[in-house]
Length: 439
Image 1 (cartoon, rainbow, N blue to C red):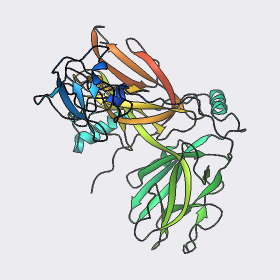
Image 2 (image 1 turned 180 degrees about the horizontal axis):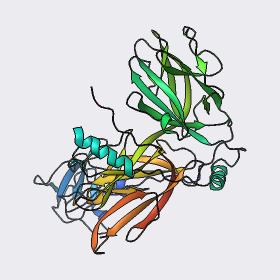
Image 3 (image 1 turned 90 degrees about the vertical axis):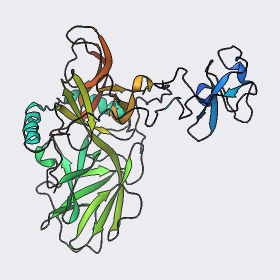
């Protein structure tokens, strides 16, 4: 296959963490570039901003990610793998995890701890309200989509659009329903067929792809994939294809950049199939039939509340949560892997002074920000995508006074005091779905 071109690569960040109760930001010697070799350390007193370390300075011990201890000068902030001869260990300091260039587990409480789920009649009423305000973002024009796909796949002509394949699950008996989602609400999940996986494949043939046709049976209803022949010789059920136009997709039989493996497993009594991402052997009573590669995706819900102030939230998951005061504005699908032509976006949140989120291409762990999700989205318009913006706010909407910074993902024009920070292209979700009732 002619290799697809990735327009923009995501860059990694070594942003530092500022611990809440620390005066000096501690960094591992490797993260600061002070020590290239643990076994051949230079004079540690020469690392602190060109100044000599104070005699008999107090040092605090931390633990690097690989479990190796290192030491940080409490006065100068310099770090070393060995405790200097003229230094002493500060037993009064917190010797917990490093305050280096990564997130600190347990450093802050869960920012979502104050969300109040609704139940019963309150939940039912609030669901109806959310359905009334839910919107589907407009897709880009066909002209812009055609230009974008030629930029992502410049050496392929014609370029096939991507289609979302939804894998829905029912447990009585355990089986999956494979649906080619074309924007119709009937192609989405419901209380009977619950979403299990989403992935994107090609609608038409592309280099190095193979066709996979969706077939179905009745009583009980189930679907399977057929790649030109019966995927399981022991399957004696008569399977049918959609009429008048068979449904299916084109996917990679072998690994390709940005793709992830999917497996078709079969079980009898009655004949039924599931699609799984488990590379290990299938569950007891199931046999593995075939494998293909596709682009895995996840669903994200953009929500807002006005209590205690106007803030936004991006929920990662199949179902929209039903929490007091939170409404869902829209939802979108984005990739889980670095698909050609996409960049990585980090979702972070914090609970103080109130719940807020941060959307950026690089994370930061200062001021209490915590990672909770990430996604990959296109940098250029692609067929079926919508243009979404990541906006940030530093002023009160009414008084224009400085407030704690927060971000949002939005699908309409940005208005002051919100400022557009960046934009990306993702697939809009046509429906809003809530978790099925338990029991």
